[in-house]
Image (cartoon, rainbow over all chains, first blue to last red; front, top):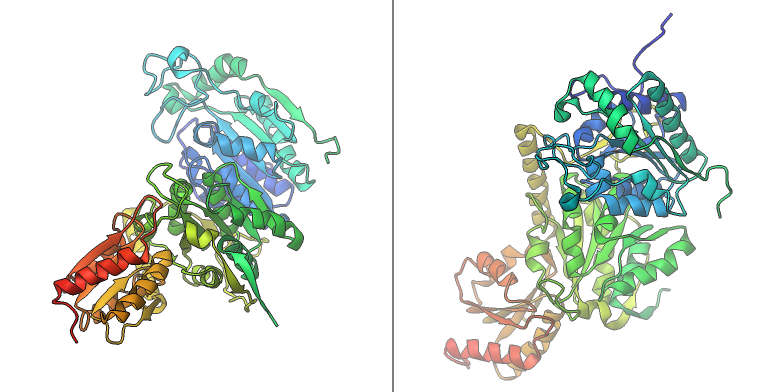
Length: 249
Length: 357
């Protein structure tokens, strides 16, 4: 009896992610959702610019690579062209909360019927560890070598809190993948984001607090603890907006 | 029977796009092209199409990128500053070999510039505009009828060669009204097996991307793309000749500049000066062969432009500097009048030794 195997919705391409990076877990959760909801054949994914740029090589569904930050606009185009397909974006913090903030906010306020998986690891990973819009106050990065000084670099952006202030979006939740319990909860949230779309509920965004041991300068274990001790207190987990039960005009 | 209707150039573009099967339009307000968006906002909901006012020009072109990757005809329109913003997306469309129609109803620049007609985005349009090695097919209408016809052609060309196509109009073309005949044509059906339609679990996944980290691979893609561009140059170059049979002075002009030039050429002929005009309809591919051939009889060329002189470089390249090429121009939203062009023709004629009777 098989008790554990790779989802069929992941290709055989080996992940390029660093040891201890939790992108792999999040990819798996998305793939499991595609498989369990049996939407692999209907799904169209939008990859970001950032560490997950090669996401298109890993999912077996149709995929497109968007320009930096533009995934929600690209997904809008795809969904408007093919409303019967299940369209999702997979984006990092620099992509979604910095260069692509306008696209994110406006897709949310249109309640665009798409699912957004937002991976927040508080750093630019692909370019080697620069300050992100979500880097914590005092966090040391290549471009905040003395720690993020909020007087000059400003405060981190809390995406879920911000988007939930809008009237439109159907579902906004923040989860983490630093423990078994949190991974299971993240899985439930990602499934819900896809189900919402299939039920035409509109825009769902799941923020996933993720680890970047390489650029945080930690061991994978230390990185998971850092999520628990530093990230989650600043970015509290939970459902920030849920209008999926209401009938929207 | 279809009848001619009186329409603004911008509206003619919008209706022609619908006739060409475009059901997805994304735009952002900017003068002097906003009528395209307004027309689409009215029409699209009535025919089951999509009109979406994007949050920015950048978002609009990326929505176009999304629809195009999903395999459907789509377009966006803007004016000069907005096209600069779209240039990132246009480069990505080119890098992914995605077809789309982009309309630029040019205004004076640089920067915010003005809102009066201009042709100063010639370099931007014909050299790509965004980063990397690529071309757009660039169509330059000189009447409201051509605004419509070239829009329809533009969709077919984009699909055929899998490349973004641009209508490079100017504020005059967008704003003026003329009678136009709008007729539905049979849409050229082009298979798009690369499109994102969902695998249906029946095929391997399609990937639309412009990323290629292996330089040997990326080089190969660039060479293949330029091979396709060569076919476009061979098959799709368009221009119109006016009084060129015996012309000794050749005006080169497109768009509104070509309309003014026409009057100046007729006046020059009345004075006994053998002037004519080559009007490029495709700015890329540029009618190089026609100009090269013209050097056999023509003794001098005049490039008439609403810019500080951009197309003149293509005229010099095409004629390989075998004949003198001079510039007759206005800029910043001004249009040369027939007298200015006539004076340029007369001046050139005098330099060549006056009227040969």
